[in-house]
Image (cartoon, rainbow, N blue to C red):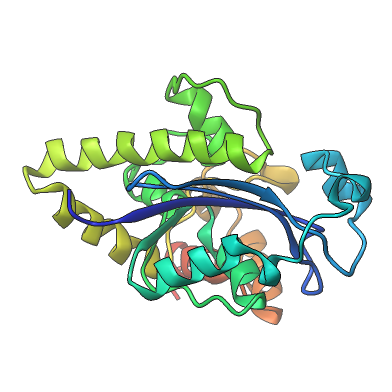
Length: 239
């Protein structure tokens, strides 16, 4: 395999537009390992702290991300065309872009996982769910950026191996296919909220299409970041 990869995860002050990254971890296919905390000019939300357990006290004395060596290393790697690999990559990419780092080619392992499960047999595609569902063995803590990339790396190579074995193509060809999958909206097999939590979208479309029409209208009101949902709902409603 000749392509250079960057397995990356961030932890942030929250999930709103104003929020910024406070932890960045990445491991590259050429052996670079980074796991750093960064201070930010805004507070960390309580909800975020309850998830990743990073407090403002822990950031005291840390550099701002843009002033760090890590910033320049990552920026240069992406400018050279190295491929970013992340789970639900649009979130991490948005955080990097807020800091002036442009991401070119990327692989979203969430979208690849959906694509490799066309019948929707897997109940959830959250990374930690996939970790235990697929029996990925690793000593890592969930919701810590470093722990998450160790899981991410194993998940990526598991899926790459499956694609290579099922097609007979090379790893580089399948990496290109992963990049293509990541660029397009992906089909969401199951709903994970509301009265139909855990049920297949296609089953709901047969039993209660009005609910899905209502959901589509809600998603279309604020379509940014909702491309997968809008694609899925339009497809099952034949719109």
